[in-house]
Image (tube, rainbow, N blue to C red):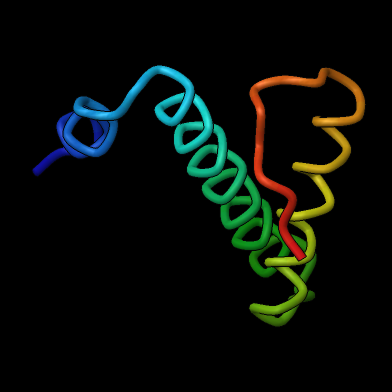
Length: 76
């Protein structure tokens, strides 16, 4: 199963608002995991899994304050 097929399968049956929320959470997670990968390779530094999770939460909250949408759950 390719990435595009997986993405479409994951989101296909969801209501629009839920689909947008799940897509946003997946994108923020993937982006921050990619940034952590690059940090490890290019900067020879690393964060713990908990710290990466916190980075994801911080970015979601920053985006929510700046843009107000898509409606993302408050994560603690």
